[in-house]
Length: 113
Image (cartoon, rainbow, N blue to C red; front, top):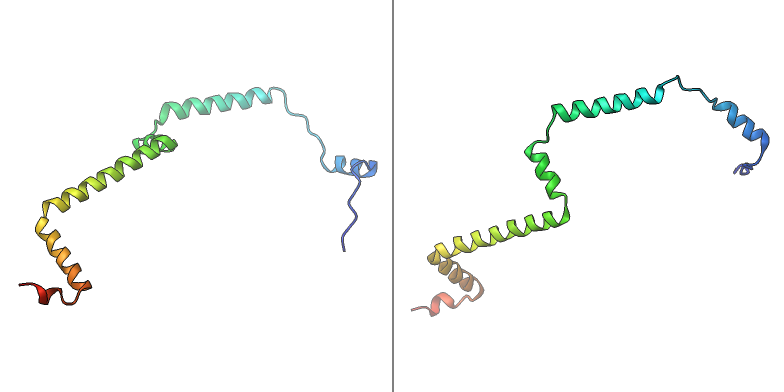
């Protein structure tokens, strides 16, 4: 069974919630100590580690324009290498065409002189 929604303006509920979460005062200089540690961590991290070439490349490829440019270059290289490989072997290309025609047209081999 659904319980009724409590009224946020109910004083007894407000007092109960405040008692459940007591407030604690921070020690003197707490904020300064936190920022000192943060800055110390930044200094040691930047002094000891430099990004590797893989991290640098990944950071460069995350940008959409760079990623599309890299994709276009890789696609172009693949197309050019495939075209060059096909142009280097014209005899194999012709035999592949003949095999395809023979598989589609069963009378092709019989009609050749």
